[in-house]
Image 1 (cartoon, helix red, strand yellow):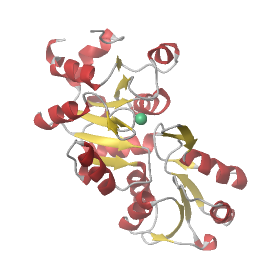
Image 2 (image 1 turned 180 degrees about the horizontal axis):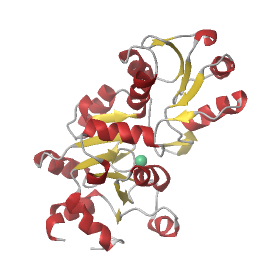
Image 3 (image 1 turned 90 degrees about the vertical axis):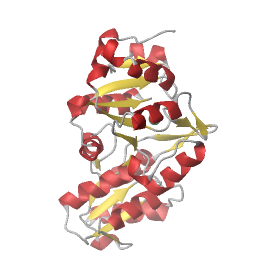
Length: 277
Ligand SMILES: [Mg+2]
């Protein structure tokens, strides 16, 4: 079996005490679980190693994710997930007055997270203190115009995540970052972005995990979000090749993960042997 491209990375696995695990391209692709995913998660649970499933996707609630993953064959509860929606709500809970009005483009995930954090979602752009933008597959020109009006009227523009695209069966569709870019362009502002590779969601996830960055790892399938973000906050970074990155892309990139593995089968095998590598 081919093992890591970064042998010095392997030894550092022994120091890892908690995991942030990307979902899409790592645990599943579409509705298909990826090889080794149930076993890797089961091993962490058995060893009582803390982990969180981490996703930039702001459209689903943790309850919806838990239901989906359990249905696919990995038993999970809402507490196992940390989404860009939860991170956005947590960031605002620390920054803003409770109850302030927020104009939102987005779906259940972000709306529920903001309401749970005690904010009021408003349809009136003139009263909004923040304009929060996530993925919304029913967004209209009217929504974009109202969001821009909120920013013109003084609301701060916040994006749950910067993803330009979302993977679908037959390729890609515009993601939250594309919607955000339309509003940012119209309003002439630079938004604050919460999700990977920006540090806010990663730092808040580490707090939730209860493990300091230097003893935590992230495993993901994208160099420019999972790995770049992980490196930025000081995590041990593992790239899996089951998603959007091929080995040759990884080797020619300027972003260098500590470890590259084919899939979670290989990562689990290294993890089990980590004290003797
Ligand atoms: Mg991914």
